Amino acid sequence: MTRNCFLILLAFFTLLGCQPKSGQVTEADTTSADIQFSYQDITGIGRDSIYNRRDNSDVIKVGDTYYVWYTRMDSPVTAGYWGTIWYATSEDEGHTWTEKGMALGLGDEESFDGHSVFTPNILAYEGKYYLYYTGVKVTPGNPDREFENNSTNDFTAIGLAVSDSPDGPFERVGSEPVLEVSSDSSAFDSFRIDDASLLVRDGKIWLYYKGRCILDGKAGPGLTKMSVAFADSPEGPFEKHDGPLLDKSHEVLIWMKDGGVASLASISATVNMAPDGIQFSVLQDSVKNLPQAPGLYRPHLEDGNPASEPPGWGIAMKSKKGEAYLVRFEMK
Image (cartoon, rainbow, N blue to C red; front, top):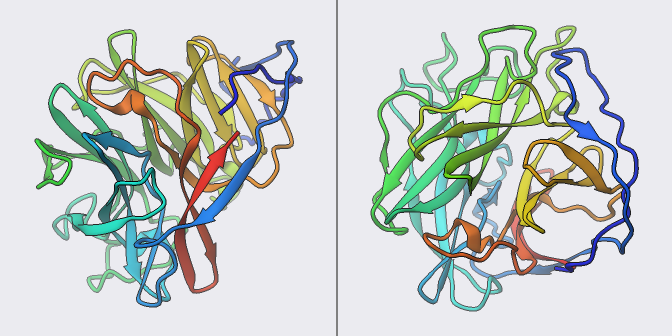
């Protein structure tokens, strides 16, 4: 991807009424060209008449092999709330993939992840592989694990499993999530948290995530905001930042850039930049042809890899009624 700077415009932090915490989006001034996205079909985890795949992780490389994790469910189901986590490998920078198997199944029926596990992400750290994921519990009164996605009962949490190998087996770290919804009903993340994206910075683990509240009886994607939590180790405990960092950020994609942190906010169609990883400014607005649920190849997530900026390709999702599949994208 380009190392040029981008045109900085004023970002208005649009409050949606859940938790008006202060001062996350600021104003800056510089010049540059726009980020552009292009897409290619892939084999192995692309279009499939039997399974749907979506919500993939960032990509890491182990030896000569690239790894990606994602949510898989039976076709024609497309929602991640009925999925388990699978993984695939590639030897050619993400053009051709081989599905290797399930990385993580459902938890016990009474657990926070007994209904579904989905939206995984990965961190290789000190010889271990940490798989973060979203868990949904079984709705009370529905032992057959049938419930309406987006109902006000379907709370989510972020769980963690760990392995000595990227090929597993992954074992859950305890029976509780590593990050939960806020107990304050007015908080922006009091209904759902999802979509972990990891960073190692200043000797700490940074876990960026999206949160959502219930406002006037509704909890749609338009209420989604991004924030971050910090821990001294990948297993936590994590302490949340006080309030959201980005508004209208339904999908969390972050990457190292120019010594700081860049982020894509999908609903507002902006690319944002924070030299300190916290105070974001709009780097580019009105971004066209955005990827859905994207994950970049991020060398920074590989154990001991000093590379800070990604080479500009990743895996994303395409979806329509009855079909969800993965594609390769380039960001230039």
